[in-house]
Length: 58
Length: 220
Image (cartoon, rainbow over all chains, first blue to last red; front, side, top):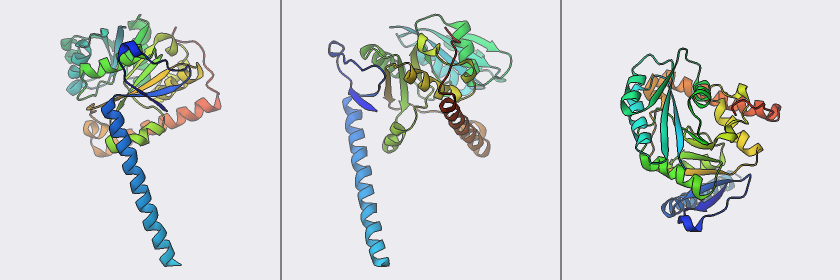
C-alpha cells in the first residue's frame, strides 16, 4: 500500500488507476514512522536474544 | 462532492443516535438513511430523532442484505457512503476526512481505518476490513448479488474495486472507537460473533478466488 501525504487542494495528487493508497497527514506519518521504528527495534532485540540463546544451547 | 450515507443497524439503540447526528452534521452528507435490519429495540426511534430517514426491514437478513436494500431502494446519488451504527466516537470531522480525500485524490472508493496505534502496521498489510467507506455508485454495481450477504460484502467491495482497476484510498481515522461485540453481547457470545465474522470474510475471500470474482451487474 503506497502512502500519500495530505496536501492543500491546489496541489492535488493523482492516484494511478488500480492502486491502493494510504492517505496520512503529517502527524500520522510521523507516528507511523515511529511505530515501524519500534517494531524493527523490537524485532532486532528479539533476534539478538534468540541468537544468543541458541548459541548457548549449542 | 456530497453523498448519501447508509447506516445498516441491528439492535444498536445505545449508539445509533450519535452516529446519525455526526453524519447529519457533516456538510458533505446530503441525506442519512438508516436501514433497520429487524431490530427489536428502539434503534429506529433514536435514528429518526437524530435526523435520519428510516427504512425498516421486517426480517433480520444480515449486514450485507441491509446495505443492499438501502442502496437499491433508498439512494440515488453518484456517491454513497456506508457507516457502522455501533461507532462510539464518530465525529463530523471523520466524515469530512473521508469525503475530502475522495475529492482531492479523485478516488473511486475511500475506506476509513481505525487508528490502532502500535498495531497499525498489521492492518495495513491485511485486507481492508472496515464499515466506513464512500464509493462511486458504479463500483458497487460490479458486486455480484450473492456477495451482498453478511460480512462477505467487505471482501467483495475490495475485490470489485481491484478488478475494475479503480483508485482506492485508506484514511486513518484517529479517535474513532467502536462498541465491539463483546460489549454488546457479553464475552462468550461476542467472541463467537467475532469468529463467525472472521470465518465469513475468509470464506468469501476463498470463494472470490475460486470463481475468479465473476459477477453479474446487480446494483446499477
